[in-house]
Length: 461
Image (cartoon, rainbow, N blue to C red):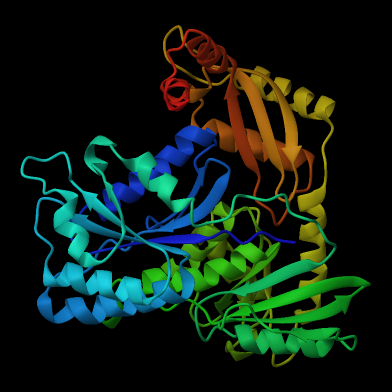
């Protein structure tokens, strides 16, 4: 069963420190997990892992604070948060008395019936008010923070994880889940119906778990496939300032549940920023991806020459996901529709393939011999060995020393060699780096009682 991560939304009026809080929480996750930072194309979304819990963190930075725009904008955001987020963080400025706007935000958040945590930020500043001043907002759980000085962040995380389930071991099944992702009106529902109609062996209609994700189960070449159709992300506009940032949550739910995503683009409107943003989210989530140009029948003068001309343009726009196959389709004429199932099965197989450790290490040694990783004077990264630790997506762990100096371009260089050795078309590849010196130093600090986490645990006992 594909995973579905909980979502946590940060809301509040402008200039209370929402973005700083978001950045601190995401960085805390990266420091704990020590994984390579993803290529997220969206600065209001972050994946957090903390104490065996995982969730998506969504920021709503950019709210207009003009009086005539505020209420309508925040009301839309709260409505979306109530429908899609599992936990809501209401952020206020602790140096300011609660305003009518703060009261409005708190009231709407509480009305959603979702767990709500009040974060009183900027608590380090002179003149910061006591938490009692904010109890009138009606939110029982209050956490004092200073995002600027990284204070209270773990307290917020500790409160969040009391409301979401711990990451559980997934029970694998043989169902391939495919999500149709894209902007509204790019032909997702039409393709969804065409894919379903092409199959004679319809198994069942499955009720969606959210009002915007429709599902249907089909069989193709003996394989059970579940199709997920989404309503689509709204395109940002003047009437949707801040609102669109929450609409991504609905699409995100479908991406999380899927193994492979069809990223649909209208042949008449290609390469928008939103398409690239969606590709970044799919990549960050570690899901398979196929770029599907829909409505090819509507393009005037279409032929092989036109396709060969357009394909490189699309490739340039999605150069951060060069591994994603590209296909031109038409639900009206049926062009390449069935081929999508074949591609999805291929991508699924690529995601599940396992590599031999001996072959991996031969490849690593050849890579290092041909191009040793650069570093600082007298401090060069040493890549000692590599192992594959997971599939779906393929995940590799590289052991060595001074690994923090490994440049992102070197990671890309090694990934290219890996893809030339194995066929990983259609799937992202994830890397982690374990620095043996750092691990040894951490063990020594714990043994000497210098580790702050260990100290706190001992103090609690």
